[in-house]
Image (cartoon, rainbow, N blue to C red):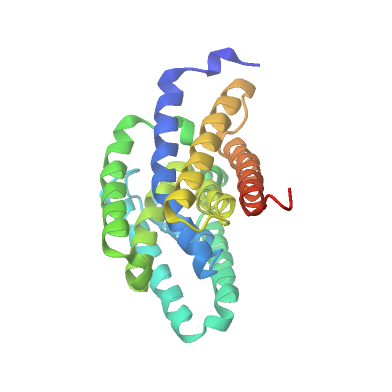
Length: 263
């Protein structure tokens, strides 16, 4: 056990990054679950990641405007394409989403086939480097997420599917670069699954945020103590607390429905 790993200089920005991701991904993930397009986040995250890899191959600076514009453009094109598929061929949408994910993933491998650091780039894209995030990186993300949440809760995105896809592309593009593809998917889906039995919006949001914050906090602490990859540990931590919250919600629903006569 590595107690030296509990360095607040490293953990504090990582926890802040996790909190920012959860702030936007909980409502987004609940809408994804409601719409029945579970793997859209994985596909768009992979497409945004492909944009990042393409910008890297083209020689754009890390975290510069070029890489951001390329990544967002790729995610936006992918999101718009999936929106058109949802409108025209809803019965095959999940198959199209899966195909888009595979195409984007293999395109990334082809782009980096002759790059001596290709394996490292792919690993960073998938698992992320959340422990290396700095507070300076989080300020533009904070501004973007604040805008996304203001539009999300202020405009009523449920009735505007085009806006949903645009906000989704914006958010996932930023998140992939912070925490990686795997954590983006886990942050969207696991808290949403944990809160799926709650019908009231405020309750489902609270349960989702509770699951996400607890999962990131415990996962990051464990990864630091055990010297294990942070992204992978946080995914497992989110899954564990997602199950516990889901069971607690189910038990509370049973207790609420139980009449005195049944007791």
